[in-house]
Length: 300
Picture 1: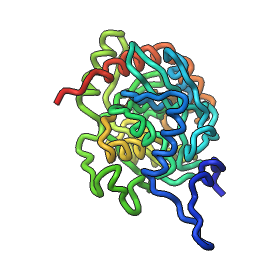
Picture 2: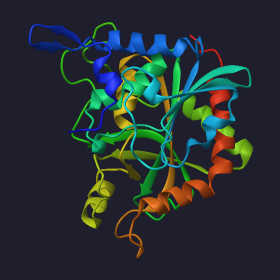
Picture 3: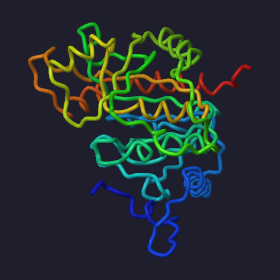
């Protein structure tokens, strides 16, 4: 059985005879947002999702209100070390920001719709822009542990998609366009912020796999041939769900390790967290500046 937020799975179930009917996704999002607004009314303009070992950013928000995922209907819990499992709400340079401190993953036993519920909630709370972060493995020596990679595109090789099944027209179209899944204006802002801070930010393509096992050396070579620069176990499904709802998406990977076959050291999650901790000050500074730039009104 996959892990589950018991409250999330029972709060709004509709029972008719012996059949249990789940409410629509848009209805569940409305319920979750209503619970959040009792503690922080919003609306919020920018959302941020923090990956493995990168959660420190959430605690830097001003006027911080932190809500555990277990207190929000339908939001899945996270069981992965380095993912705090809390929604952080506050301001950044006067801009209202909503931040997911940790995410759920397919490898925890959730389906794609559940994995992306958190980012859809950010959109429901008013976020017109969401910045996604992750810890990723490098597929070539040009990207070293501690580097930051700005996502220009991705390969969804997870074997799943959050848009499978009946489409909820209240959220978005049946066949959303993904030509520019990572917004070019957000990329420009990220590059400008990095240059000002003296941070090297390399563009690249992210490959999303299901996990939880790390890739084999042959798989690393395959991903390189497909055009990927880094590999991880998140982000792509979130970006698809957000674009379905018309939200602008930006994403950055913290390179925490070299892929299998590129280093003599065995891969471990402890090393991922250690590298994320090492780059934390620079990463938090970059992300704060990028989020502030992203909060600016969108030009027509």
